[in-house]
Length: 354
Ligand SMILES: Nc1ncnc2c1ncn2[C@@H]1O[C@H](COP(=O)(O)OP(=O)(O)OP(=O)(O)O)[C@@H](O)[C@H]1O
Ligand code: SF4
Ligand SMILES: [Mg+2]
Image 1: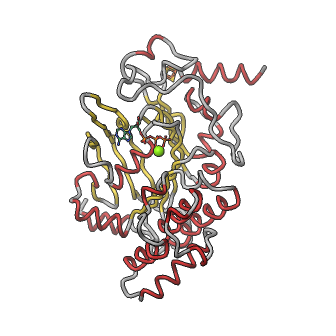
Image 2 (image 1 turned 135 degrees about the vertical axis):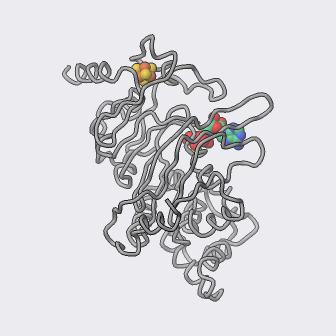
Image 3 (image 1 turned 180 degrees about the vertical axis):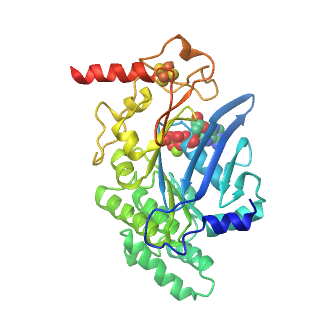
């Protein structure tokens, strides 16, 4: 398909401002593989991950520390470290272009104007030697070249107020703020440019519940008003239930289970998901966090053969420790990568009947 046609076919945004969900492929990650190399060691952080997000939709990524969540977001934005990090394979289709092979100049434009990221560690995103107000207003001006400095500052102050930062603090430097305040500044900056795609990496972890709710409201407003598409990384099941259409469960740099929120919450099927969600996941799990799963994640520089979860899985059989693991479609958009789905289900039902 020619690019023009692709854009035309998929850009419904102009015509459907308020209907929330729209058809059409917007972001499509195919078989993405990312490695970090230091000396002789190769860290296999992301191992052949594929997912799509339709325009205006939201995907939640969950999984324990080190499973490759932030790496995926950074690969999309192409901000992996210059040295030692490499997209070793795969494609990242965004509005009909493969970002993996886009020239850096074009990526600079996309980063400034179309895709923004809220970082897990806000200090990496904030400039330590620039006042908060100057940082946010320069982003706003970049997107509204016609705006005067004063207008941009006024809009910046408004945005900061919406994340709970009063005007009396806007002339401070980042180091004068607490971690939670820095995170809120980052959220305000990330949202102030009205991105087409927002990559939000644990955007509310350092925030108390009231501010957290405000930040989530802001993201939802943005999605509704501007049709923003959301990739959300979180440890909080309540936030997934509240914010996401679909869920991808990561383990060892792979997606082990994928589906709509309903499919995943109603019928968690991968032993790892079952472990993470605890015995009875609920769709209204207010503030519920992912449960720790027994055992530790294998070292991504030395991943086991076969199913990467087999070293911890209570349902592992011989087949699990070698070869490819089948991906089984369980329904509509629900996929699970496991040899023993039937046996796991039966064991779960037996457990529940007790
Ligand atoms: N710059 C880097 N150099 C070398 N290894 C890295 C680098 N960044 C990440 N890694 C490794 O890649 C793997 C995936 O890291 P990543 O940050 O994507 O995990 P994550 O799922 O975001 O974890 P967390 O929940 O702790 O944020 C980890 O083993 C991590 O140690
Ligand atoms: S493939 Fe085997 S080890 Fe992996 S999750 Fe399924 S049962 Fe467990
Ligand atoms: Mg991370």
